[in-house]
Length: 65
Image 1 (cartoon, rainbow, N blue to C red):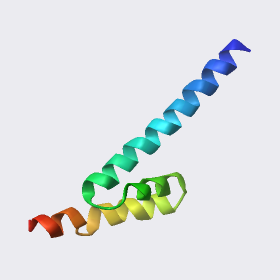
Image 2: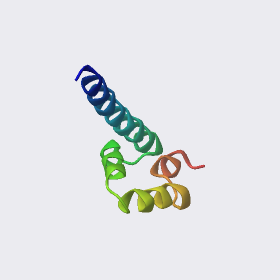
Image 3: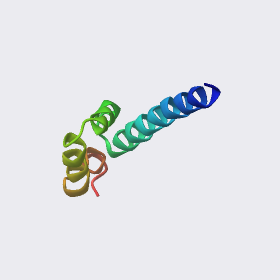
């Protein structure tokens, strides 16, 4: 019983950490941080990775890179 409680706490913590990491990545690229929540949806997360990899980031548009 105690091990399942620890497992549950670690699972929830890792899910929250995963969401925060993607939130920060999208925020730093100039997209809204809420786009990071799309990384929890299967198939959509792959599409969002393609968007990050192959499109011009809004932050680059403003800084004229």
